[in-house]
View 1 (cartoon, rainbow, N blue to C red):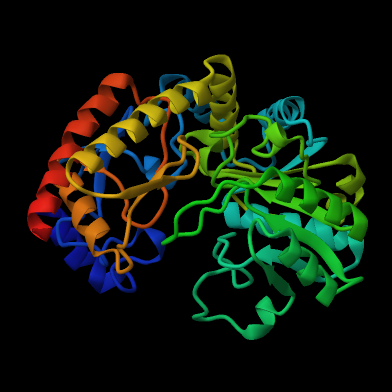
View 2 (cartoon, rainbow, N blue to C red; view 1 turned 45 degrees about the vertical axis):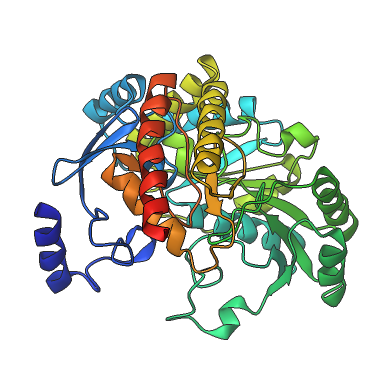
Length: 404
C-alpha cells in the first residue's frame, strides 16, 4: 500500500508524520493520508481508490477539481510569470472585481491563508481605533496563529489576553462581554454561522447579526466577518448580506481561487487610511497565478450561478441522507447551510458511530468527515449525489449491523 509506505517515510522526516487539520492518523487505518489527483467532484488516493469528494480539499475547491476555466486562466498567467518583483496587473483586476461584487468592500488587500486574513483584519481594526480588545465567540475557529489556534502548544497566555469571549447567537452574552472591556473594544469578529468542529452547526439568528452590527456601531468598533470558510458558498456578496448586515471588514480565503493559495481582506472607506498604515506582507502574497485563478473562479461562480447549483445538490444529499438514516433506524442531525453540510448521530457523544459510519462511507467511495463540516462544489451533479447516496446507504446498513 503506497499510503502506508508514505506514512512510514514521512514519520522519519516530518514531525509526527503529519500535522494540523489534514492529519489522518486519528482515523481508522484505512483512512487515506496521501492523494494522487482530483477531477471534478472526485479524488483518487495514492492507492488508486476513487471517492466522491464532499470535503473539497477542506473547502477551497468550489467549482470542482481542475476546473477548465480556472486552469486556463492560471496557465496563461504562469506563462507570463508568477512570483515577480511586484504584483501583476491581475491584482488590480481582482481587487476591482471584489469591490464591484461585494457591497461592503471599497478596497481589498491580499495574502495567502485564512489566518493571514483574519489577523490582518484585526490589525486594521486596532490601527483604526487605537484599542486592543477583540470580542470573539467561544469555540470559534479563526485560524492557526498563536492568538487564535485551538491548541495552546507553543503559545503563551499573553497572546490570547486581548480576546474576550461570548456565546454565539446570544446578544446578551455579547453585550456582557463588551461591558467587561468598555472603551477598549477594537473589533467584534464573528463567523457567518456557528461551524465549530465536534458540534452541530448553528445558523445565525438575524436578530443576533443585526445586534452585533448595532453594538459595533455603538462602541465605535469594527464588525469583522470571518468569511474564510463560508465565503462564496452562501452569497457572493458576503454571507450576511441576505440579512441586510454589512461588516466593516471581511476575511476571505478557501473557495476564493478553487484550490490556488490566496486570501483577502475587504473593507470600507472609513478603514482605508488605517489599512494603509499596516506593514503586513509576504514574499509570495502577490503571486499572480493565484490571483488569476481567483478572478476566474469568482467570475465563473457569478456567471454560472454556482451557489444555486451547490444548493440543489446539497438539498438532494440532505434529503437522501435523512431518508436512509430513518430506514436504518438512526436519528441524525443535519445542520448548517446545505452548501456546507454536516451530519451527526443523535446520542453519539463519543463519535464512535460517526467514526464507524464515515469509515464505511470511505469503503464505498464517499469521502466525508466525522466531526468537521463538509463542503459542496458546483461540480456535484444530480448523478454524482445519487451515486454517493448508494454508498452512504450501504454505510448505514453496515453501521447498523455493527451496532446490532
